[in-house]
Length: 283
Ligand code: C2E
Ligand code: MG
Ligand code: MG
Ligand code: MG
Image (cartoon, rainbow, N blue to C red; front, side):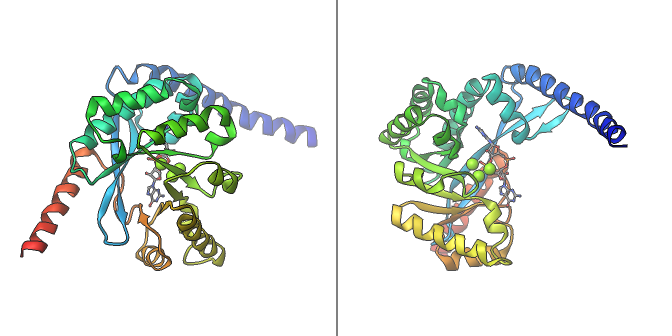
């Protein structure tokens, strides 16, 4: 009986796995042409300062408009891009596009760009970033690079000097998805991050479990101890926002404040807000 069920389990999974492998191969082939075919777009998610409810900037998030499949999530195609090496030209495009867009915005707004760990394995990273800044005229202080701790797990000898070089240019470095990986504390000591982005799983628990609240308080303490801005990801409810404000978080990002949106909509938000503020000041 055990043998039979084992066989049926095998039969059950096998076609599914084959489909997954097929999809992977098709996507990786199609990803190769996606840049040339202009299928990528950046969406921008607002980041709000809690001190004065002001707009601090946006995080750039890539979108792939597939002609047949529709929108493919970055969580699906970024790993394929990483494994195939396509992340290098795609990452270059993201940096150029994000810097170019942000350079046209008011000077107090920052732009955050995600970098994959595999981009750190290429020595071209530094020159790519410098070219994106030079080409757009964006001040380095307005660019924030988001990395996850996997950068430290992979190759510290390579990534630490690169991070230091980026920081010397004046770029700010943020640690993304904080609290979800390994050895969160040792790399905080190894590198002076400018920002800690607490993973949204902790924000989700803020109202219901004491553990999440304890972690949120600890992160506020770490932020002030390391002189790093604290940002909470995935804020979806007013109650979460209220608690984060009470606990002294620096910034928030999440569907409550705005979903990732196309450039035109982000600009409506930028100039709409500015207009409202001017009216408030003058009226
Ligand atoms: P991330 O950098 O942690 O980005 C935050 C993700 O959380 C985004 O998903 C965003 O849409 C989502 N999010 C924001 N607020 C909320 C909320 O209130 N609730 C929920 N449930 N989700 C929220 P997205 O855009 O699908 O991106 C997923 C991941 O893909 C990113 O996670 C990042 O790791 C990666 N990624 C996106 N764009 C790029 C890129 O240009 N380059 C690289 N290397 N990775 C990217
Ligand atoms: Mg991010
Ligand atoms: Mg994140
Ligand atoms: Mg994430």
